[in-house]
Image (cartoon, rainbow, N blue to C red):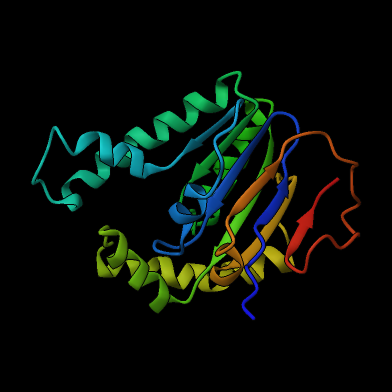
Length: 203
């Protein structure tokens, strides 16, 4: 008997910013595509910026477009963060601590609780995921992402950085069930109360 993988459920009540991070090819876009559309929810995936550019620059290699896509994506992230939209979900690799810290600061500056969902993936799986989606990162850049991602999960679980309301780490198998967000108010949980095997919640 085959049992379906349950979706990852995150409580993100109130005015929040959820960063969905992980090395390129980890499955972030696939996970976000499973998220049902809802009133008061904005989901920002750089793939949308790339898709918008394609009709204008058809045939141009993605390596040339990447800086423009990144600029447009980050501009959209800032715009959404300052908006009145209650729940903003952002797709970024964020394998560098300073990128994650910048997102936490952006959330604080715009009156949002910051939540982090980290997707942990084996580098070979992530590389296959890149080829499957047709967006392949240069080998040198990919190796750098892989090196940083290898130690990120342990760092997040062992010594959660400040600025985050919650930090959740899942692997590709767990993420296969999709993502669901609970946006209505929930009881505040102590940081010492276990929520899931790979979840750190800050009161």
